[in-house]
Image 1: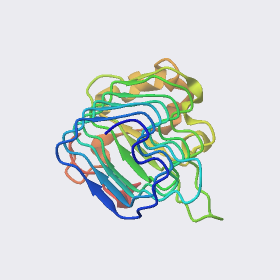
Image 2: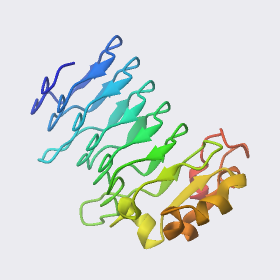
Image 3: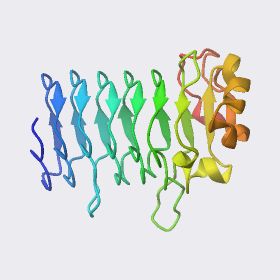
Length: 208
């Protein structure tokens, strides 16, 4: 899918493209879709799904093969509730900024958060009905690097009401790791919060 291909589209429905492997810059910028599904997509360029204008509609993004969420990838998608980004190893700056309906963000393969303000402005907003991002799940058995302290500015993580779930063996390492140490109080052992007590199991939402 080329750059700007669906920019500003007001379709409102779902787009499923089983054979798409790349998504260009601003391909879905300000586009209104309820669901996008690209099972074979491995690459997306900056601003691919960014929204900076109302309506913000994009409720589901299914990209299980994507390797990196680019800068401004989903920035501004205030209504985004569900993602499948199970292969993502790197997340760029402002990638999830303003994604205040994405209550649980599970990035099982994440190795690096490389940009600024990646999860900023995701705090609960009762006036608009956005629940806020409450859980970031990092399942890799190695500490994910965090390039900037401000990645969680104006979020419930910074306010102390959201938590970062990591393997128990890494909790202490995260608490002292560069930039992560700022959020030391927000780390929890993943095994204590999954339905089966493993690092691969689903999060038990009743325990959040």
